[in-house]
Length: 249
Image (cartoon, rainbow, N blue to C red; front, top):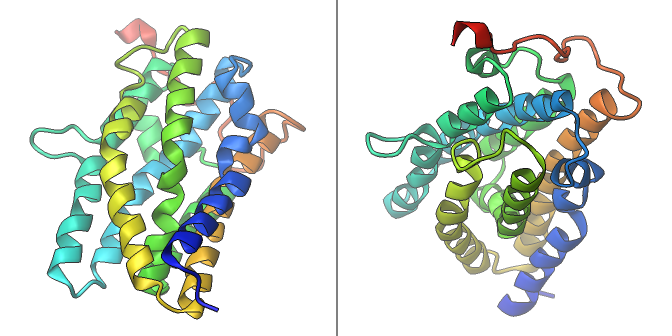
């Protein structure tokens, strides 16, 4: 039976309450100040792979959209990450965070040292958006519904617990607090409008579950490689690699 608009939105929000990666133990370590410098660096390196793939995901989505209005509303997401003449963009802000934690931003941008599981999960998300229905692709983006709190918690936790944290190094998260709400409002409204059968509602909910799995699995890989049992797989970043040469500054 098709759920009402209100009931279906509640169903989507419950997925986030149960499955969003703010519940992952690695975030408790990170936000609580319990990560070592190398664990923070490993997080920055691996999360970059996700950040730099988001515009490619959005471009893949837009290449399939025939409605000019939907393309117009969606393309700001690419600009938010890649930047414009007046906005440096999220990718550049993330590389500034990398520099603040002692990493060479060119090394991070090369994506060398990214964990195999991170690549597998992120690439699967890009492929999902490229191949699934537009409804499923938009629904998968709705993890943004739950991101506002994690960004606020992250800013507060990093500022309180780490010397590298300041307005410059954390500008990615601060800007997402301003940029994401418009995307959330549009994406949620679009899904609620277009998921007008039980089959479509089930598909949209499954897409959101898939996306929470993508985010959670990245942190599982990070935790296993750098926290417990601290077994770094072949190809993963080794502490000491890709560091910024402070002497050259």
